Length: 258
Image (cartoon, rainbow, N blue to C red; front, side, top):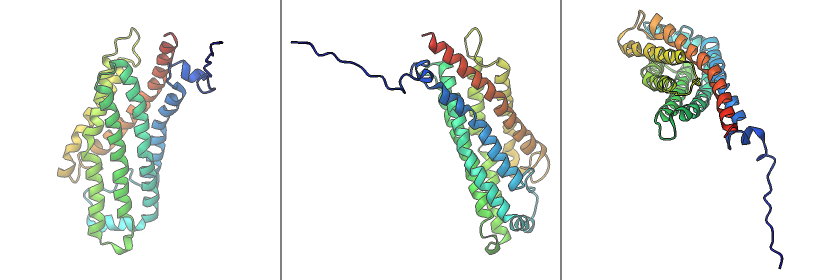
């Protein structure tokens, strides 16, 4: 009796170089996801700064009447801007998910830094789109709301946006520590990128002053708690992204030699 032979068929997907080169890891998808950081920045600034006119935002010291007038005069633009800002939030999580995968290759499967990186990115995305919904609510039915109600939602959005800074700080610190712990002869990220991450995390700390200052550098529209925080946040994204892209190339080359 002839012994039946079994043949294994390999689907075209299984033969894809992008997959097999990484032992099952699709590096093409990972590299595409790095660009979600740019999508986050573009959509966020377009909504927050261009349409809503929050660059800089209406001052913390403004009266309820002044805030109410601002929202009534710009109701449609603010709602458009907040829709774009709400849409951008999840892109930050996608970007952070890629960084988490890279960090996991640096520290190993039992490391906690990759989880902190991932969860910090998820929460930062949440911190992005939740205030957007709050501010969209303030701009919704403005003719039927009192100045005090509009101001309440405006204040609530900013306090939520700023006082949750620890989520983003922990993410930056986790990435920085992972970079410095890379024991490769040529690390995936240069060490100075870690210090950009640490500086970004430190820049967030003065946000604790937002509930206590209505004017000056520590107000939510001030030199430190608006301009310094936003500038460092975007600098970190633009610094980390190209090195993350390069790190994926290095990891793919490492896997192809296995």
